[in-house]
Amino acid sequence: MEGSAGTNRHRGTVGISGGPDSILGVTDMSSTITSTAPRGGTAGSTTSPRAVVMLVVATVGFAVNFWAWALLSPLAPKFKEILALSPLQQALVVAVPVVVGSLGRIPVGALTDRFGGRVMFPLVSMATIVPVLYLGLSGNASLTGLLIGGFFLGIGGTAFAVGVPFVSAWFPPARRGFAIGVFGAGMGGTAISALTTVKLVTAHGTATPFVITAIVLTGYAVLAALVLRDAPGRVVPTEPLTRRLAETSKLKVTWQAASLYAVAFGGYVAFSVYLPAYLKTAYGLPQADAANRMAGFVLLAVVMRPVGGWLSDRVSPTRVLSGALGVVVAGAAAQAFTPGLVPVGTIAFLAMAGALGTASGATFALVAQLAPADKVGSVTGIVGAAGGLGGFVPPLVMGILYQQYGSYAAGLAALSVVAAAALLLTVTVVHRAAATRADVPAGA
Image 1: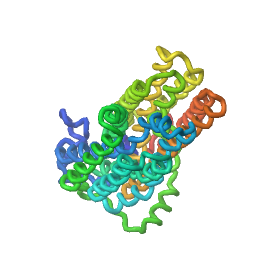
Image 2 (image 1 turned 180 degrees about the vertical axis):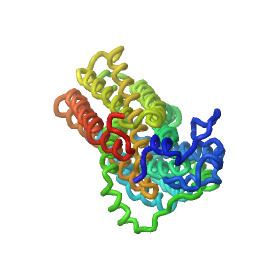
Image 3 (image 1 turned 180 degrees about the horizontal axis):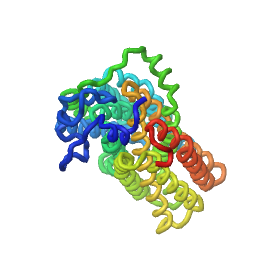
Image 4 (image 1 turned 30 degrees about the vertical axis):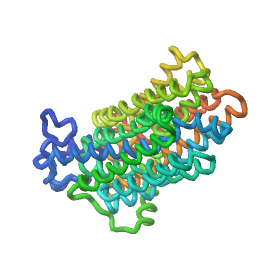
């Protein structure tokens, strides 16, 4: 297995030229990346403008699909009142798209390894249009309709497993952390949903945000089909899908990264889908105010995700993860006591938002550095599924605990404990494994 980005720089496998554009690592890659680059997918004929265009279009696609994926969350309190849902039923409505989108990343990631992002991005976007229109036009009238629509809405969440291998193939190892972090900022599509959905429903009716999102998805699918191109020299696997998934499941990096991402991105997803309900119940905030605060949480996490990738390129993913997880441990422990929203509660949530975004970016910097080039999509699928499942469980747990005890304290305390376990895993097993693969001393 290839070494880390830092190792490649020391060995001279990949050269990065200077200049104002070199922060993306794509400045005149025709002269800076050799044809023997070990990771594949960054052919010598690639030019920086094209790599940047691919990154931007992929990031937009991720954001648009995540916008669709998160449509039900801001409306969950409204559906609870109209349909007389229990807290557990309300949690199910927002959790079903998460779990489907998470598990769907496993086959979608493997299919992306085989067919490339040029095929998979338009395909996923078009498939997401159907449940979006169904939920907006008829599926919101009953719990059954919401669950069925939410199940297929999960397709939008699989876009993440398309983008990571697609972007990774366009960038050299020394800049993949930052590039994938920028792509990961597309998770801010959930903020678009949070900021616009409730307002559009209030002003123009329930169907409006769903119809608008379907139109945007259609436009993006056309754009992606016309513009996206897979990286020259991309490594295309020849093994059958089941064999590739089996081989991927045997890689230690797959399960190490999956465990960390279940906490990092899982925590982000859990808060992004459940925070409006939490704030309304625990602090009595109006629905619109709760949605706006959730949007602020999401935006901060989005901004910090590229920072996590950028820091990982310059230090190491494990060190970035360690610091971020430490912040989550402290923030969740503080919030377990339900302090006043101003200032302690706000500080705790914003600190956790920044830390979860940073840790998410660092996790996929680890994947981009250590996963075999022809299995980045497959590894991404499994790791992404773990992250989504990590976001599926907490809303259900929070709903059950509140229904049973009338408090969210135990759920937040559990998050603190789980984050502490992930921190311990990072500073021991994962750090040693990463140091060994990079051929540098563990303490370096």
